[in-house]
Image (cartoon, rainbow, N blue to C red; front, side):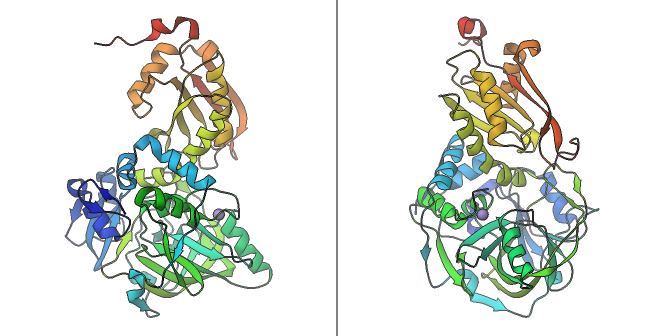
Length: 435
Ligand code: MN
């Protein structure tokens, strides 16, 4: 456990103390706030500041907690350019976690609760219902492997929700059970610190443990493994604020519409039903309201993709300086990559590799290492002064891209890459004057 700026001891405290550790950045709302649309108004008004709602039907709710790269880096005790490196190491070298016997959320346990009385927000007017957006689901397969993944869930009634299962790991675990007519036992976790959220947001191969990725991040950030406690045979991180025992049934119901990362509405689909059976929560728990299409959503979806782009570019260009998915591209569709160019053509190879590293990527700009990739104006300056469209543009029509881009046609999209690196033989002509 390390001491962080502001004298806050991270890695061993609950969400309320973490948020308080961010000091003056935090917007505190002490007046009662409605869970229908009103939470959204605050989260949109203070897009890059944590907002702590003291009274949403008597519950504490927080949003925009992890809405900037700087705040995440500060919590993890690394530079913002190093987040991708500690994530890459976690994905490549997951570390064991430690089983313990107790957790703050075990203090309060009940079968007498209603989802309708919990502070689950409705975010936008056309949403199909109130939505869990920050929930991580833990499930165990027949071989004992435990998977973690993010899934939005639309509240249907007092005890049931519709869960969006994209065809990845939890989907295949559920389908295996469904084909035998069985339910899938799950644990729903709400209110997690960012190392657990980032681990849950990675897209590693089946069999790679997201809990062990979280443990790798915890060891790097706090010098100790992730601690978990078994809840009915499934391990759950002790730092989680709310935990639900639940089951995914072998039956479907309508899910949606709901706003996705691009800020546009996703359509209604038939998705599995979840039944919630028992609720656990810490004393004075904080419910995490993750604004769909907000900066926090961008960070959690985008940051785990940056190491993939970095690794792909690194295979073709020896010196990769940095990778950033930009907020303007919803941290999903647009990237900036900086390289130390050694050969003519490195910029174009970096473009092709970036698309291979993150197949949903649509536009990528490659710059030299003297450009600050975290400064959109500096990147635009590089495009303005170092790029000629007739020879530095790579255009790929009819590629497979993101289904989340409303301008794509059934995920078919045109991609472009801008090589805004300086020509090697004339580098000094492109230098910015310095004092
Ligand atoms: Mn997985």
